Image 1: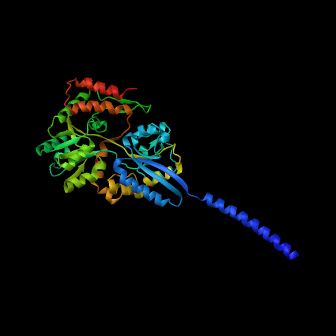
Image 2: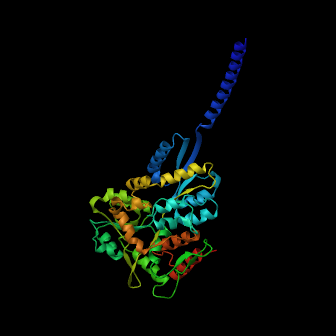
Length: 410
């Protein structure tokens, strides 16, 4: 009898034990179920193939940790800030943007300071760290260190001697029935004429408004001297005012022999011109009887993480993945863009790139772009009038004053 009772007691204990174990197994299964993560990534249209490839490798890397739905959407890097601040909670989780938008995005609370700063700094070029920082705090992940411009030219039509001056380039282009192109609808490029003249433009201490002396009426180089030089260039039969896209179309159809652009077009230019493709720093141009070295804005492309993302951990990991050494190397291979990663920047492939070499050469005459939003439209309006030959006949000093008033508006 004792043996029977003992057996029954053990059976009850066993049943209770199994019931408890069964409950625990259900809990473990629930705890280890993969999280569903939905992310939206914004980037340039030209980066579509590259970014989708990077996204796929990210999903493969972390496939055992989450169930991902990651969508790439085209969004202009230069207008990313405006699109994002139009609705932060509806904006992309991860986005590519030009560094001149960093201050506004940080001030609006769209970006939070990044945590693993030491690791990023140890692997990144200093100028890219500076471009991604506000008050010495890192707010974005450096992606490229090549957001500047230089001169592409076709050696079949323009010699190494002619390419040193804009006068020489224009003469060579016209003699061959070709064009030198530059985008005067973009204030970004128009800065080239003012940057090394002693005339100034930049941000005030408030970080929002601008100061500008481009209308200065005294000194070695006056604003009106630059305006007259631009009119002289615009009147050349070898000059064509074209957007960046139109420049590349001209390279492909053979109408363009030289033009000012950036590394993003290096692959297509090399395809079109083959062994005649060349690149160098910007030339000098004639202003007030002197040769003035054309200046440039410099900057970086950055990857930001939306402070309002529903998945901040995964967004940060994806941003790190997009900007890691392997993917910056892939970016150079597929898009010809210069890396911010020190190891990739020091690689033989980068050092032998004509476009990157030209950008480095031009860097001596470049300035990190720190300009408030009211800079762009007034400069584009002024330069558009110059490109058209000043058809209205309005006094140049009056136009310069009006431009500066717009640039400096509060």
